[in-house]
Image (cartoon, rainbow, N blue to C red; front, side):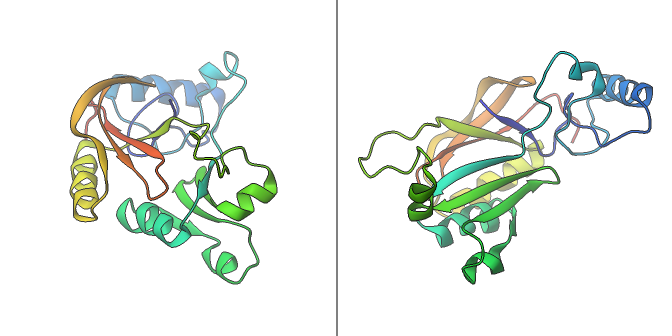
Amino acid sequence: MLAFGLLAASPWSFRACATRGARDRAGASAARSGRACVLTMARNSGETEKYMVVDLDHMALTCWDIPAGIRFYGDVLKLEPVRLAEFERGEAPFVSLRLNSRCIIDLFPKDEAAKSGMSAARDDNKELGMSHFCLTLSKPNFNTAVERLKAAGTPFDVEEPIRRFGARGIGMSIYVRDPDGNQVELRYYPNDKD
């Protein structure tokens, strides 16, 4: 499962600090307070020796209806479109939506995905290679997102929040479907300070 630190504290939540010691102190302080220094997805320096991968850059989704995908991720979940004008002029092969300062979601039109050899572009109605991805929100933003998703008529797989294990322990999650049928988990961590 992929979990994003959009509005939540975690060991991933640090902007560059002046020194390694400053990053380590910031990480310990954030862990004690339950708050992040800033909202990014870089691991703190205490974990860089343990993990080779330090960040998630993007996710690429095959999109059957680009305008519907932009409405879902852009209008409902409030992610900012990137290269939309270039895509509309035919100068970019796909459109992206900014998740945070360090991560985007790419929406590949079905035909472009097939040309690029993306395995998710299938005509045989088989399951895509991804089960779901998870976005972390603060509890107030989680509640707002649920209201917005219901108002938009978004299909829910799990509408009432349920306890689920994630990157930072147990959180409360719902599951919805984007316009292309990708399952999106939205969660908040009850112990976070809003």
